[in-house]
Length: 439
Image (tube, rainbow, N blue to C red; front, side):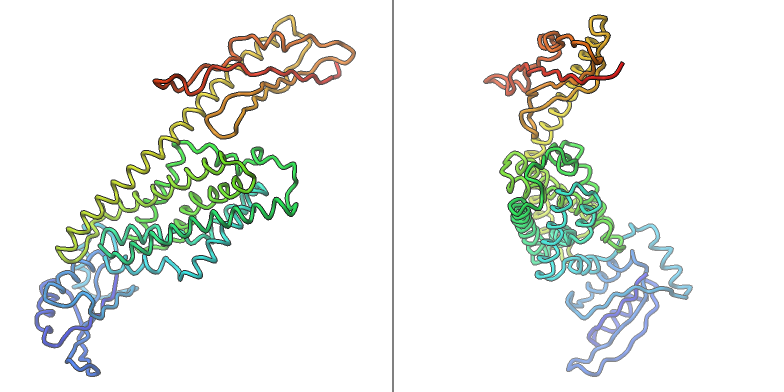
């Protein structure tokens, strides 16, 4: 429930009292004598879903939208008339008023200097956590990232036609992404050149990095969930702290990977992570925009409502087109993951069948590893490494000659275009490594 306080001209007193009486709202009046124009401060409690409707009714009496208005939480209201009012508005969609949502969206975005410092620190911590392969450190970077405010601010500004809030949200998102990439790249370069990590470090063996190199369509679930949860939490008037962590989870670690890819000179890594970041940013924006529009938030005046409707449709179309284009890359990654997974399954099955035959009864299969030409899709297998054990004091039979010509080793051509397949059929090298074992 909310306690509303409005300063109105004294000449509007009778009209305002009539509106409140018609709504069955109890109120108090205090005459304000410190202003040149005779004024009255009117205070009344409202159920949360009733705030926007009642304020709109009051403004229809001629009260300026920018008039002094305070809306605060009320713990308890003891009144039979208030109970009746709650029951009347119980069927309404549970959401805070347009004014409260606008104020909360502004409050979620810190001052520029604070936003800049917190963004830089979150990306530095995330990059360090990625290089350390530490999930705990990466999660810690998400907690301090101030990314929820600009994302929701742009959507709120769109649906209520607050152009200043929209521009601020878009500007801070762009600045945040740019600063994050530069910071991550500089920090990773310093770490690499000063020897804070081993020169022999294998970035593609780090699970925290590897998971961001193959972003598939399932990655969209995180961004969709973050956008919906963020907007829904904002309209419900509850704390958005945990949702801010979720939004940061979709953006901060991939930004760190972009910087690492730049610092280590792997453009494919930087490109794959950049696509993931852009898809997530756009998806968070369009889903939060859709939730706010679905919840019925509109500007107060009719002319602004038309402008907001046009702006929302245009921005939604732009976001949707951009997401579809970038999702093509995610679809390609998803296809590549399925293709390589099926290939690895077939190779493992064939290698196992060969080594279980009577000709190789003394050999024991230890491991099958498939090495690829590029860690970033689209990938082709370069080498199949089979590790087998053989008894001490014996000469192991040549297994590679048996495995190399097998049909399962050859990859089929893939992604056929009018000009031919994007990936040609390929037969990788088969390498067998022998390890002596006691009988």
